Length: 368
Image (cartoon, rainbow, N blue to C red; front, side, top):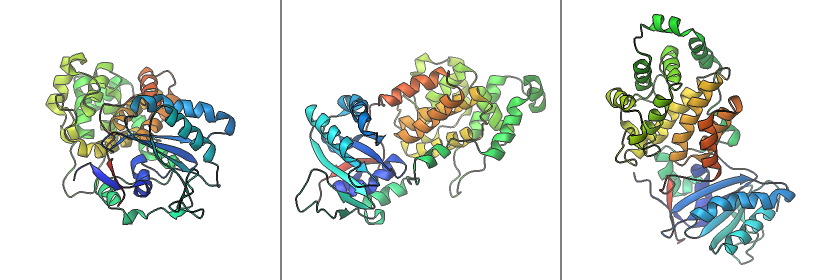
């Protein structure tokens, strides 16, 4: 099935937005910028700020929006109490229009109904209009078929990268062993080659007809995590799982040769010349990296930061900004000085993305 999913009008977009964001937003404003072909080009979400912080929030949103906007914009507020989203929505409306962009729609979602703070026509009655049920929107069915499913809230997104007590304890025990003991127990010869083979096990292709896939043993997961301490291997692995992030010419040729020899290529991995190839499997690939992040305890801060930053890079490439932010927040919480997480955090903060439309919902059709 194609990633180009048609949404007929703003009301259907409201039903689809949680699938685009990855979770059901609350007390926030979502900005959706379309390109000239009416494809979803850019999506940003911010929490509702206190009244005195509205100007700063508007400027934070407008930075990437000025760079990304190439067509009309939709503004959507999510609120618990009537009118609490209005100050930010109206300030953004003024800022976007001052920038010269068309604001196609300003909507507020509250208790399953859509309201408008700017429209008084019959299409926007004071009692609101029900947001279409997700099962009644064809675009939602298409996104579900593509593997998209929104989590209940942002806290659930954070949980995707937090350590799982049992598995993290097991992997942490292997990571705590002295290097010599680990090698003798594993029969290793070359640490780098062992790490690449461990990553080959972590990233093994899914088996047709199986639900999920058994996780690699703790020892193998620990070897994969240790491999990211080798900066040349870490950078090459990021380029392998998220092609286009780092040019092949800038990577260690020996490490690249090891990856090409041992690591599989499903979900577009290793597609140096065609970075977009195989994109339909990248959400499943991201699940592998998130599972690895949950396998590393917080008392291994460098290892947590390396794995979470690797996962964040892929999440950002596939357009899952919420997961990218959650992974980076954990990385920088346990290791504030991890430079790659700091750099990627600035990329995410400023909305700098690979030069392609956001995957998932990619076309907004006219209502009717």
